[in-house]
Each structure stands twice: as C-alpha cells, then as structure tokens.
Image (tube, rainbow, N blue to C red; front, side):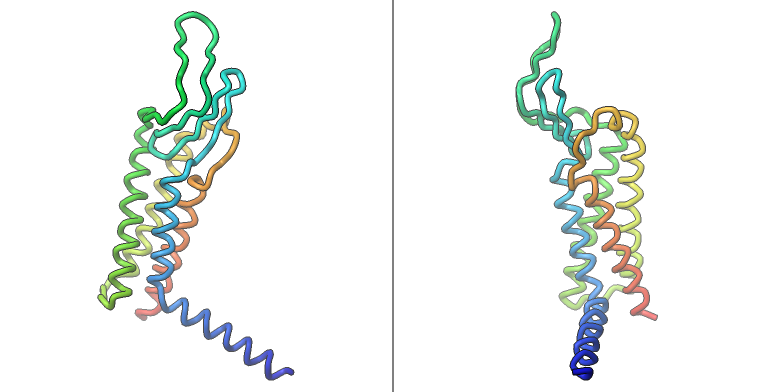
Length: 180
C-alpha cells in the first residue's frame, strides 16, 4: 500500500515537471485567456432611474440593453444596441497592448510547438505578461474614479489580463530556468 502512494506521488510529480518543461502551453493558454477577456465585458452597470443595463468593454465599447427613459426636456432616449463610446486613451492603449501581447504569446507558443527555437523566448513570454498586467492596471486606476460610483458587476474581462499575464510570466520564468 505504501509503495502505491509513493508511485502515484512520483507519477504526479513527474507529470508536473514534464508540463513545466512545455512552457509554450502556458504561453498559449495565456494568449487565449487574454483574447477571450478582450471580447468579454469588464463590467456591467444597471441604472435604475433610466432602466438601462450597460456592459462595458476595455477600449470604450459599451452595449446598452433596455430603453433609456431620461427625464426632462432636451434628453434623447438611447435605443438598445452597441455603441463606441469613444473610450478613454488609457483604455484604448491598454486594449492595443493586451491584444498585441496576446498575439505574440499565441504566435511564439505555436512556433515553439512546431520546433522553432528562439534564443530569448523567455524574455518574450515574461515581457508580454508584464505588459498585460501593467497596461490593464493603469486602465483600472485611470477609470476607477468613474467606476467606483456606478460599478455593479465585474466581468471576466476585468480578470483575464491578470490571469493571462500570470500564465505568460510563469512561462517566461520556467523557460529561463530551462535554458540555464
């Protein structure tokens, strides 16, 4: 019975070590998570006074559901639909940086899987992970003043850059260790 536990423990440890040697898997997962997050709202807000849900994406795109009923003369009703609200500069910059980083992660991980060898692959993985986390953090800080008063539900788009960045950073660290 004791030997079976030791054997299972060795098998699990061996499987983890072999997975950590395949750093391209972590980079690919990070890139995919980042792309999914880009297409997922970062927040959803419900305005009771005008009966509208607003789903907010990184980069200034919002989707309104319901018909707004703004009180008073001179106010126009906003029909439901997709709107490019103009986005703030930090949101647009963060969106571009996260998209480019995700593309790099996916591209380099697939090329590595096919057998292409890159001398500084660890630096690509590490830098893309850091760029995703830092860019999104700046956007969160820049938009936090407006968001704290109206934010109701945080979406997956708000967590995905951190998850993707963590996968990329882990890939970079283990790629670097594997080269030493």
